[in-house]
Each structure stands twice: as structure tokens, then as C-alpha cells.
Length: 330
Image 1: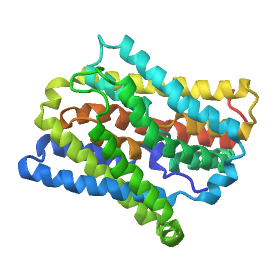
Image 2 (image 1 turned 180 degrees about the vertical axis):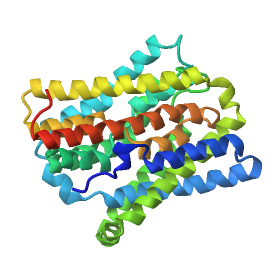
Image 3 (image 1 turned 180 degrees about the horizontal axis):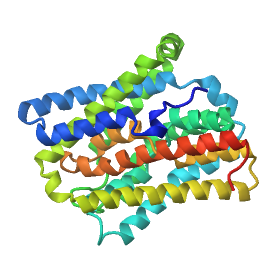
């Protein structure tokens, strides 16, 4: 398994640098009027393509190979879709006096998202974990997230912030048509497209990231037009960073020691550590653009952007440490 790029450890991921650049560009030159309508159509098409490629990249053979390790998958899914949401609700209940409500809603939405796929598998491989189980856990988390995240958002986010309500029937239709349908079509196309995608992983990755960047620019443009920076202060941004670090530290510590207490092998504990602690930017940004009004998209995805970078840096360091020690971190 190839190691993540060095910038993950040495500094900011270039992808995050581009993303921050687009946030600045949107702050200075937001898309408006007819251009905004056009961008919305282009963004919808990019999201469709993104999830088609997600489906086409999912290997049935790799998933079947890891299915037998059901205890690992069950703990990863419980962490992702039960423990994380409970943490999100706790943050909303306890930090309302210190953090803007829209940002707290962003943290709750972050906690409802599925795990990442690529980085979870890569870090598991670097650390010497059970790669087949990681492929299965991360893929299953992403697949279930297409359905579970909107359901959880509808159940838990109603009334958590101004303009953020439950998931409407229109949003359900959009989720089905823009996320689930292309994912299924992409996976069904794998007998014909799988070889091409496997041979051109670099370019496919660029298409993935370009789609996310497009959604980020469109989302922040809409939020800037609605007065985002008049609602979010420097203190709020610092609070987002501190809370994101705290949540990640809690999850990393909990998954590692609870999995040890439950008697999992070292290789399986590594899977639970990395697959259970991650949240997917690739799924989260498109989902947010469908589920929430444009006026709150910026603050909704801001915690996710911060958490994404922190999780990459932290997990890269942990994976290398586990690799060097060739044993558990105590």
C-alpha cells in the first residue's frame, strides 16, 4: 500500500491549500446572479460524476474478502453512526454559548458522515493492519452513509440552527438522484469501467478533488453573499480548531483502547482506529450542498474542512509510529 504524500505530515495537504484558496476567492469574488445558477447546474453534474466514480472504484472482491471480520465492521459502524452522533449532540448542548449555532450544526453534520475510504485503507496499510478488513469497513461505511447520513440529519438536526431544518422530500429525491443512483450505476459499470479506472487512478483522483473544490467554491460564494463573515468571528474559527482537535483526540483514544479491551487483535485494532475515526470530505461536501440552504453551507462545511486536515496529519503520524514500533501504542 502506497504511503500518503509527504505534505500530509510535513505541512498542509496541497488539496487543503487549494480549498482555502477558493474560500478566499469566494470571499473576494463570489459567484452571483445568473452565474450562480449556472454554477449550481455544473456543481450538480460534478456531484453526479463524483459518486459515479465512487461506485465504479468499489471492488466487490475486496469487500467480500473482508466481510468475514464482522466484529470489526460492527464496531467501526457503531463508532461512525452512533458514538460520533452522540458527541455531536453533546457539543450542541454544551457549547451554544461559545460557538455560533451554524458552526455547531456543522459539527453535528460532521459527526453524521461516513468514514473515508482511500486514506483509511492507506493508513491501515502503513501501520501494518488488516487491509482487507479496512477495505470492507471503509467501503461499507461509505455505502451506508449515502442512506444513513440524510436520515440522521433529518432526525437530529431539525431546529439545531437558524434555517437548518429536517430533511425534506425534495432533499430525499436529490440524494437518491444525485448520490445513490450514480453510485449504483458506477458500481454496475465496473465490469466495463473498472480496468480504465484502475489504470488511471491519478486522473480519477484529480476529477474527484476538482468536483469537491467546485462545490466548496459554490457553497462559500452563496454564504458570502448571505454575509458569512459578518456572522463568523476569528474567535469562532479558533473554537472550531480547538473543538475539532478535541473530538479527534477523543475518538482516536477511545477506538484504540476500547478495541483492546474487547480483545481485538493488533491488526484489527488498527482498522478500528483509522476507519472509526475518519470523516469523509468527499461525501460530506456534496451531501451538505443538497441537504442545506445555500445561506448556511459555508459554516456547515467549515468544521468538516478543518477536521479533514487535522485527521490526515494526526493519522499519518500515528500510522508511521505504529509501523516503526511494529506493536501497539500504549
